[in-house]
Each structure stands twice: as C-alpha cells, then as structure tokens.
Image 1 (cartoon, rainbow, N blue to C red):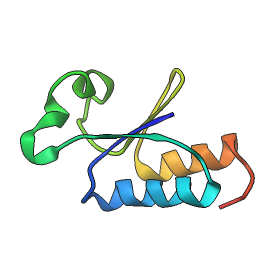
Image 2: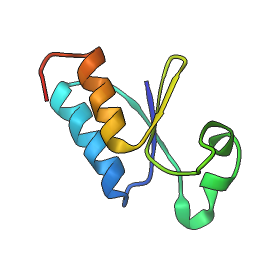
Image 3: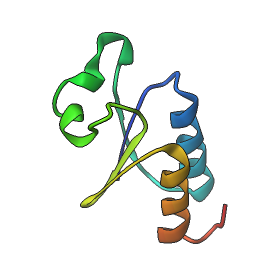
Image 4: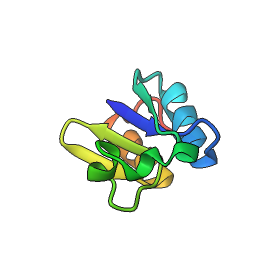
Length: 81
C-alpha cells in the first residue's frame, strides 16, 4: 500500500491517522505541492485532478480522504474506525 500525500494537507493527515489507528503499514510518498509535483508524472497519470491524498493498494487507486478511510475500514475491518 502506498499513500501519496503532502505533509501540510489536513486531508492527508486524516488518512495517516486512520492508518495509524488500524496499525497498517503504508509507504508514504510525498507530493510537494509547492513545487507543482502533483502536475508531473508519475502522480499526474494516477490522479487526473492532481489532488492529495491518493492511496494505491494493488490495482485500486483511491482519492478523497473519507473515501480512503471508508475503504480501509472495509478491507481491514479490525479495529473498526
């Protein structure tokens, strides 16, 4: 599992909190928004909107923090959020 995020993004922070509460290991891949990295490959090819966070889990690509958190709770039900 890989999480593309920006350290100052509150949406990314919510996902990192959910991952920590569930005890899930995830590779954090920073996307530096101030350097416009969200507009460059490889990130731009995964996220058409160029928004963080983006979770990659196998073939699944998820954006929007609440959708990511819901996915994590469905795929890894214990402990429940």
